[in-house]
Image (cartoon, rainbow, N blue to C red):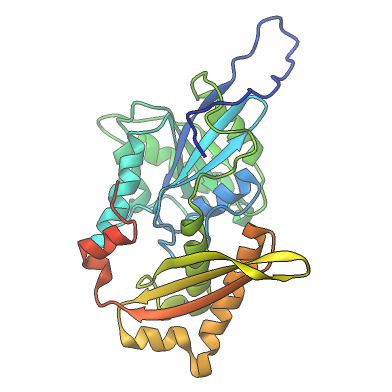
Amino acid sequence: MDPSTPTAIPDQPDNGSSEAVPFRSGFVALIGRPNVGKSTLLNQLVGQKVAITSPVAQTTRNRLRAILTTPAAQLILLDTPGIHKPHHLLGERLVQSARGAIGEVDVVLLLVDASQPAGRGDGFIVDLLRHSRVPVHVALNKSDRVGADAEDLAATYREMLAAADDRPVSWPLHPCSALNGDGCQALVEALAADLPPGPLLYPADTVSDQPEQLLLAELIREQVLTLTREEVPHSVAVRIERIVEDEGNVKGKERTAVLATVLVERSSQKGILIGKGGQMLKAIGQGARLQMQKVFDGPVYLELFVKVVPNWRSHPGRLAELGYRGD
């Protein structure tokens, strides 16, 4: 969908003033350590699944765009890979991608795990953002897990922001829960208020500009992360080979056939993914197929293959082929 072709701006809210309230639009980068809930928050804000989630850290590998349109603003939300110490070329490119987003947006949203006190990883990202030329907001996520210690934990983040010798900052803090939505409406309003006046950049009913193949590959990878956990942590990539409309139909609906290859780095990982009698691969396929049926709003036939590609995470050509360029 071409974002350069704006459509009509939604009706503006009536605030009782004769002066028109300007519609605002722009880009918001979600920045944070791995596994603080960026993808979960993204899905919560737009009201549907546009990014995969997993209890495994460093799930996000691409700078995904989700589009949230309200009567007053359109927010283009960038879900970035978690900022961490990289251990291979893929990790370096993921961190490079996340850091690059900071200088390309109108507002930065730093997401932290408010159920834990501020740590060195959070401080490292704060130092990256201290000299940002755009507004920065801090989302204190996982507020649903915080009890009587909520204020004490929040205080550790205020202290971290104020502790710098060169440039202490006082960015606004927003308690919220990506899981149940608490505080998310207020967070959206605060972010929208810092966007510049502008027209719709996407049609109002758009929720993502993610290519279809990337979305399908991510749905498969999500099942791998969920079902194998630590056995095959981050050595997996998925390549969609083909998507075709099957001539056969199920209950009057066209069936979509998807052919995909799952790449791993070692033969032992291939064995884990296939499982005894093919049971693990079958479970991965079933879980992914159910999610794909929501995407296509119809039946899906999914065929999976597993291929060993040694050290693909450290091979520039393989990374480029899979779309991990770091830009």
